[in-house]
Amino acid sequence: MVTDAFRHWPARSIFYKMLNDGKMHCSLSTFYNYLRWLGLSRPKKKFRKAYDRLQASRPFEKLHMDVTIFRFPDHTKAYIYLIIDNFSRAVLNWKVSSELKASISFENIREVFDRYGLHHLADVVELIVDDGSKNKKEVDAFVNLADSNVKKLVAQVDIVQSNSMVEAANKILKHQYLFPKDIQNLKQLCDGIAFYQEDFNNRPQGDLYGLNPLEVLSTGTLPHKSRFKEQIITARRKRVEQNQKFDCAKCPNPTESDTGN
Image (cartoon, helix red, strand yellow):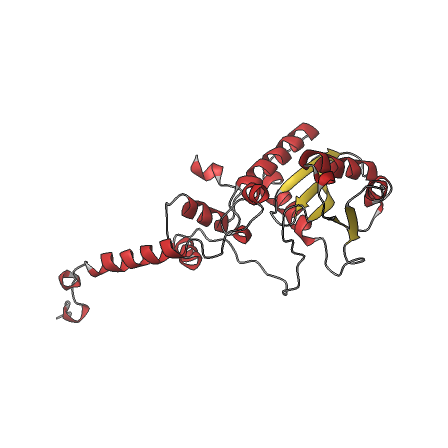
């Protein structure tokens, strides 16, 4: 079903999907109005005060790495290791383990560097992490190699910003993809995370103006935020023209309705 295909998508991603497919041309505010009129809108979220976010100017300039905990019904725990690209928002790699160890964090980031050839980049790759033992030892050894182009930055220690981008990705993973499912074991958890990576990386993102993370990761560029402006203006003009064709003279005039005599 179509509803199942977009079950994990926020309204803004669905909005851009419809724009990309040419199924609709209206502003985001109009789209939200239709959702509200149809009773499909979600409760409003409380947003924190604005702050200076970490922003990259190209893919692989800044990578965010973090670990989050998933608890099974039998109260056992699994640790989910996640790495996100700042510029494209793409989920680059993940691992799952019953242990919290720096060696697993190292394997996670090493696989990202090997898969995308980041060792050969002339520019420095900034690795944003939280303070803690899971990001030391083997991770520090990897960063401190003689030919390394990695610069590890501890959030709220080396930089004032938090590691909020990957923390937000962890929340999306758990609340939108994992918690709604009846996950009983490690295999089901891995299947759920694999689906999350595929689905999230291919769904249109509002911060990317309707492109999906893999598109931005591969092209290295963002579209202009007004990329759908002309289509929306044209659609609005057509709606006005269509409404003007409607003959309101045929409608009953409420001032001339039954007087109740």
